[in-house]
Length: 301
Image 1 (cartoon, helix red, strand yellow):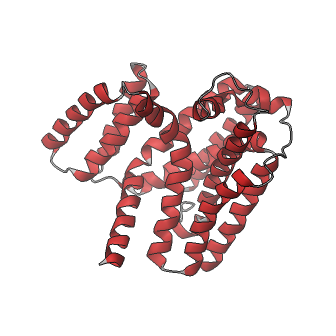
Image 2 (cartoon, helix red, strand yellow):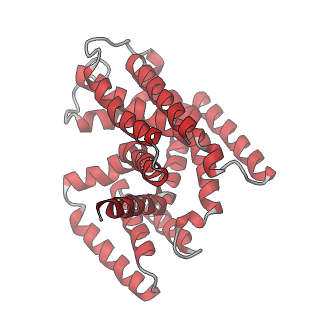
């Protein structure tokens, strides 16, 4: 674990270094190349652990709600709000009637709460993107440090917190102009910049605040993916039947090729794949925060 933690510190610094100089390109390349490999292997790993749900069929309930939201073309905020809340209900409540009642209340709450612009933005934009790749990744790092009680784990966690700070304060006036390919392809992520900076009119490729924000996005996404692959032998996500390995390899290759061959079709496919893995991970996210609370509670006690 010590070796892995210090290796992850190097991965963080490397990700931050790349984000410092080529932020827009790094977001796109990480999302296109590392992204589908992460999504496919994590879904496979989650499946082998029943998606960390209370009952074996719970994941199908979550998937059904997601599909219904997509079929009725509900806003992304509604989709994430319902699946995020449902995941908590399915973990916290075991009685099916109580679950159904709680979900009805959740839908009713969403009807009123999601009229608020801030909540719509949090659930529709930030949870499936920056919250997932940075906050949830940080939670996994902290849980690992608390569980193993080693100095290297805390070093890795605090380095993870420090990197965005350094990216925001170091070399603020220095940046490499993005390539034309990056400018043409960054549209899928543009709302993260314009919404966060509260301006639809800014030039996100030259605005200093936008460039700093893109550094943070690039670091969060790149290290999120690298962190997953770095702990292969810790959680053993690679121990799957050969047919699954071949299928994952084929879909990953096809996804990357599609992205570079037809960007608009490829980005839609990668978004759906990313969204599926975000939703399927919600039960694990809840368990992680519960574990953090338990370890902190024991320490305080």
